[in-house]
Amino acid sequence: METAPPQSSSLSRHATDTADSHSALDSPSALEHFSGTIFKSLRRIDQRKCAHAYLSGLLATPGKKTLRRIAAGISRDPSVVQSLRQFVSLSPWGFDDVMEEITRWVAHRRPRTVWSIGRVVLPKRGDKSVGVHRRFDLHSSRTLNCQLGLGSFLHVDAAQVPVDWCLYLPRAWTQDSARRRDARIPDSEQYLPMWAHALRLVDRLSARLGSPSSVVLADMSHDPDVGYLVRGLAMRRRDVVVAVPPQLAVLPGGEASPAPVSARSLVHAQQAEGDVTAQADGQQRSAVPHCALVHLPGSFPGHSPGPPYRLFTDGGSAGAPGRLWLTSLVHDSPGAVAAMTALTGGTTAVVDALREDFGLLDFAGRSFPGWYHHMALISAAYTFRSLHGAVAPQHRGPALRLP
Image (tube, rainbow, N blue to C red):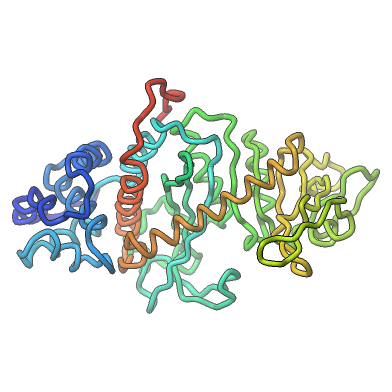
């Protein structure tokens, strides 16, 4: 286990003054209760004080949430910035423990039985930030130097909150012993494709929550190997609504010996009948999503094609195809399932808010533990800002099964 010097006593002295300088906080007592709950796994008092101070700074510091700006809002003592740097990057405390407490906090608000998986792209300069690599980003249509992560999100009423994160490590990082040592990447962390990271998030959330009926919702339209994710979720008996790439190979339903075709070509060939309605922006969109029943090709010739799925589009404008979606909810109405896909816009909005208002991009992220610590802290800040006014109901949901 790594060791680090205790945080500066100056931060401990000034942490109690945080509420006085943070008029933006609605209720310091509520924040203290939340912080004490979420960070109760931190063993040392100075760690818990640093966590509370950093959390307060994320919520109250305007503009960029750099360590220096957060420290300046906490204390005039110049040593505080070093204390916070040690706390985030060097201090030995558990990301998993903090995220479990955030999950508990959210679970007491009776979240919906939908688990969203969201993608986060963190542009970086240079090659020192852990996991940084060159990647073509479909959403921005640019090649970026970036870190890439996935997060899992729970839904409470209209809010979504992040409850777990995974950092994608390319083989250039996992197979380079010097890079691993410098970034303090644990020996247990090896290369995983994005679909495997998504399954990992689902497994970890399953271990925390007793929700066998939850639907996994994800936009994996950038991942050509999304079929592995869908099959993995089927093995876990999890229903899925997932955006897929146009080239995904599928087997048309209702044919004796179908040959695999691309998802896009099948939807074009088997458009469901539906009215076309005019929208407020003057464009034409299909009122009923184009859909077809399909199977995923088996791993070996002659094997069962597996369970049925519905392949559908989310409409799009006239002349411009929408995203392609695959769902195991074949017995639900197409309209109800299509409405669920709109929740991915909320997930994207949360990531945007983390970027703009909670310092997602304002941490160098050079070490593996530091990246996870930073993600835990901004997740806690976002959760408090989104849910601290929500009162836990008298009748709580299923008991958590924590590992």
